[in-house]
Image: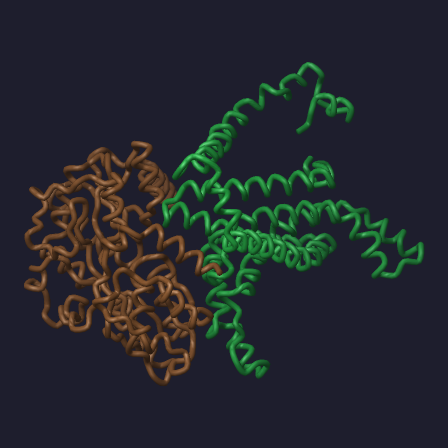
Length: 336
Length: 291
């Protein structure tokens, strides 16, 4: 028995020490339940279909991506990035142009397609609330910014990305169609009013932990995380009022070793079935417009693409253009 | 650090004909690695900090001219100092107890110390989050005992950062202190008593001064490690408690501004080296247990 264990351990050591072979495709994403779902809905299907082994890596790190491209030693073939980053990195020469003779973009939601990227899935920032912890749940962004009506800590996404600034402006009464260009002065002034009551979350799991433990009984969360919380039996409520949508994108770093396989992978990942499977597993919306046809209609109703009544689209191209300037101000304000 | 003349002066037992192998040439592989993995990256960092996005000292001017960044610098030193102080206050009695307790009991305490060091840092930090939060074990216990009515804000602030970091730094303070205290001859305390010192005087005037090299070594280690700390302050602190390492990570990973990241990293490095130099000057390597 001991011998077998030792052998297994040795084999495992060798297996993990072995570098990816040239034929292996390396995918980088953000970890957690979303990457697990991507693995099952996309990577395993891709391996079945093509025989190409897919290795998972992550979390995605823009500094690392830039370093790989600059050093000419790119180990990631397909990377899941934020939409505004994709738009900016494409312009800055860090990405390969996508091959739309392989990837069928005719059915993809045009909001999430550029020369260098296609949507990965799309999500909404929604207002989540732990019903057991409070007497009343905030319904709108204005509610979430009202500490008199809704006392307590609120959870917000820590990083500079579409979401929080839009929420602050909407809470301050800016109409959804007048959000851009973002009035940063106004947004930060509004954020100042609740700053001591904010607990920042850095990743999806943390946002769930904050809400479930009632450390922050409400806040702005990714809708998929709310779906997962509800499924795990926690008494939560999601308000879709003015849900703010943004998307992740799939990109191929410049100089990726398996460019052709990467294009095939993206073609599969954005196909109606693969997008539907991912949506089912994560609660995020498919970016393929044909996906709802192959989905359970009951499930489709719970996704962001069914919540368009008061939906607010984060403007990815505006963010791409101003990403660095907003980021610097954002972090400086946080640290004040 | 042992130079040839020193070794001879101290009556080294190494035979003279082998002494040359302790010379410079044997350190070449190590030096090579140091150059490859330390000097070269630092040089690249320096180059980037003065060349991106435009050549010049603009990054340093921005870094040192912004009140926000200066506050992050100050905060880094305040938190590190606080953590070092608290670690010393808790670590000294523990090290002392370790030095005088029966060896079997001491080995149990050592096992606990080392086990905590070997547990994944992230897991330990998350554990503190669970313990310290509003609805966490500690607050529930205190409320249950009737000691407080409202949960104490123990996390996402300076308190949380200090508790979490002190917990991680403690072994680094206790181990060198233990080494030094153990070497103190118990006879000196008896001598102090014989000379009329009470327990308090024996502690303050005899034991503490003798333990200073251990305290200095431990404190420097804890302080320098704290300066570069990332995970714990990011998770247990609020954004107002941001430390330099997190700022650097933001520059590099999120803003992809390597010029500023490099400049911040170099300032941190220079300050750390300066502190080390000051400490060396006052305590010397040998007194810090460097041998």
